[in-house]
Length: 403
Ligand SMILES: Cc1cc2nc3c(=O)[nH]c(=O)nc-3n(C[C@H](O)[C@H](O)[C@H](O)COP(=O)(O)OP(=O)(O)OC[C@H]3O[C@@H](n4cnc5c(N)ncnc54)[C@H](O)[C@@H]3O)c2cc1C
Image (cartoon, rainbow, N blue to C red; front, side, top):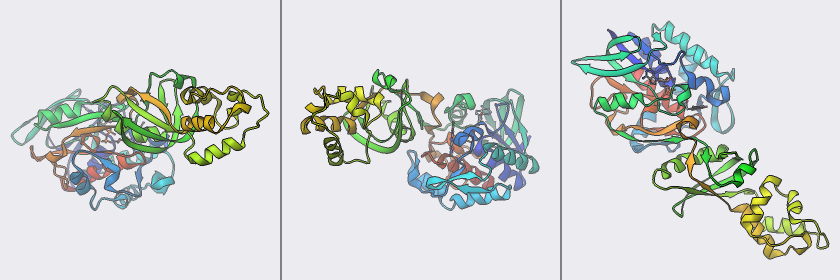
């Protein structure tokens, strides 16, 4: 019997274990994978976008915004930085407030956390999958692949089903519901989008700095600016990942969503019309397809011509009306989205344990004394840019500081 068992050696479980052990708790940390921190290791393309300097509650999502605000209050980036400095990790700033370890190596984050956990006396057991939990009196009993374990306090930091190849799993939700908690529906987020339109396949590999507007059931939802990357399954790129939360939740209700892609957002409609008009040689027999090569990626030209319904064949036949049709298609290319790449392609999951049932100061369950939650298992997900780790770190710190 130990004071505390932590299920899941990800960001939230590791920081909570260290903080609780430093405060004098006897902690055992159980991880089903053969090593700890697998998601940290791959994060930020191996560089680990460990946090964001500009923490604000509007960068986080969930059905209970007050809970998110209360968890974040007094737990900004400086608190996380102080913790990492205390374990010997220097942090530097990248673009848009994204923070990284100075080494730019995610492995340095995991190795320092592991060293610190062991130094604080945390017992780490890898290849230890928890299969069920129960509570009798004041004691939790966990059935695991390494036998039964008992504890007085239990932290579920077992994450979400996102990225099952890295340990993403639903098991924490099953344990939470077994203990009487309710769940908010889970959907993949920060995920690539699928389309069954054939033209995207022809454009595989094309990347443009664009703007994507999302419509569902004919209604405008939101828009994001950034890279648009056409792929053999649909579309990816930073603007698409940023939109994906909204797409994923809408696809639960509708068969498809529609993207309106502006391939040249830096040009207003008028500016682009004038550019194209000035580009015309009224004596040229140049085929329209080739004429557009000077303006836009050639793989995109067939779809722009098809969607614009431009009838003109040669450059010399172009006029303001036909140019207007081309410009409309360049700035309003339609792409129907019928799916996402699912949890396998997702960085995070929306939804999770209902946060109205959790105390935001301590992260303790309001239903079961001495049961705690931290990280992505909860109905909180963040924007791309270090916000998901921020929530994992600070919710874990809150547990460690309060057990
Ligand atoms: C490819 C990728 C890149 C990412 N990059 C970034 C980034 O740069 N910045 C950022 O902020 N966020 C990033 N994220 C998101 C971030 O990794 C997560 O939000 C964060 O790891 C959540 O931490 P957690 O501790 O709650 O859960 P996790 O890190 O998922 O940890 C949960 C752990 O619990 C273990 N577990 C689950 N069930 C059991 C069980 N029954 N028994 C024992 N162990 C169990 C799992 O194996 C896992 O190790 C990325 C995610 C992915 C997939």
